[in-house]
Length: 102
Image 1 (tube, rainbow, N blue to C red):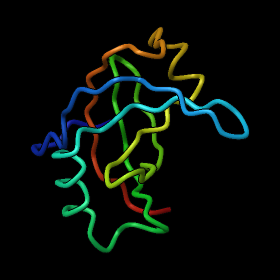
Image 2 (image 1 turned 90 degrees about the vertical axis):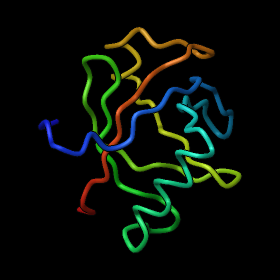
Image 3 (image 1 turned 90 degrees about the horizontal axis):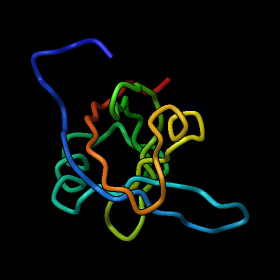
Image 4 (image 1 turned 120 degrees about the vertical axis):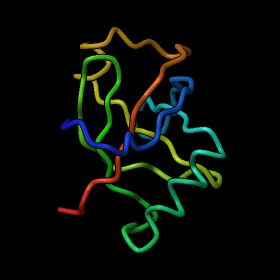
């Protein structure tokens, strides 16, 4: 992720598991940060999702935020979890920037 003058959104949250048809792991975005992202992403969202570039530790990845109960969740792919040793229940700090829809 290139360094820009605007660091985007920096927040801490907990890695949670959400069981559906298959287990998924997400990073919870705090409510206040979710509100700020929602405002900044106005017009960029699609089906409630927002394309973002994320950095956790030394790992950069692109994904789309998942809306749930009025806030956002960051999907944590298996490759990201393995690279950073992320476990469910772990507290993480992430940097997030809005990305153009592709």
